[in-house]
Length: 317
Image 1 (cartoon, rainbow, N blue to C red):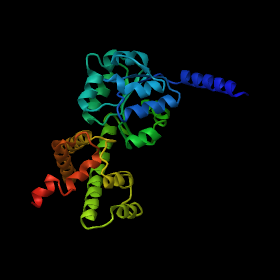
Image 2 (image 1 turned 90 degrees about the vertical axis):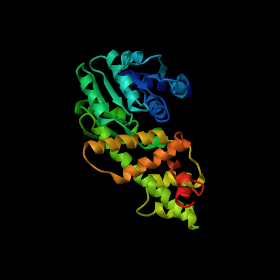
Image 3 (image 1 turned 90 degrees about the horizontal axis):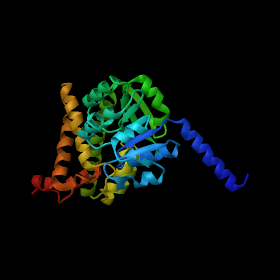
Image 4 (image 1 turned 120 degrees about the vertical axis):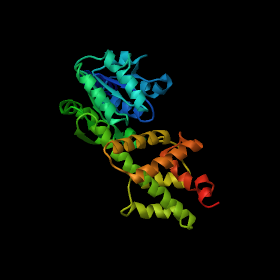
């Protein structure tokens, strides 16, 4: 078979495969949403997209997505709709607003909210959707931009078991570890646990590197040692070198992590559970935001330990 004939056959095969898959809608094409949408396009899905700022959809359109001007048009075009939004208020508006997904959706659709949001809100949306024949799964993710690009995200799911079973093969295109934890809201509660662990670990990485630097140790040597021992893990391997290099560009924004920690603490309060380490992390990230670092990455926590930090000067003037 000649090269041109082979390429033509490949295109026909991809087109036939895409026609056998559910039509997807995707709302929210930020740092995480865009690479997830691209992976779904590369897997042969037809994807209709909408986001508040059309320019942020350029990369996804180049990969083959179709842009529409409203949430309502996404609802009409898709069998399965994924959302990756910033804040719980955004989730409420997109799903429950007058021009939201439930207002324009139809029975038989499935929606997956990948946003880190409130478990109570997830349960409210799922109940209202079920009443009109739509299944909504809360499916927050972890793994950052590298995981989104590589398709190795961890996905924590809450919602109807049958709907989850139908969506599993699609989720496997973007995630390597996928677990349903229970009914509506369970995925969000699992994500809160995930963020609690990240917060404590990030504090440990920053403080360990800060002490090493102040004590005159080579921080790169420390990172190599940590990576080979019990302290090794994603944050040591991926964020440790960036902290040492002073690279605080965001894979995940301080402002969004602060929101996540607030959600976790409110859930803990509802369950009458005290989380002192998470409360401290929340205070530190709130301070970081107040000092103008809301748009930096979560590893910018390390700046609070520098010699010019106001926090350090307050304790050692």
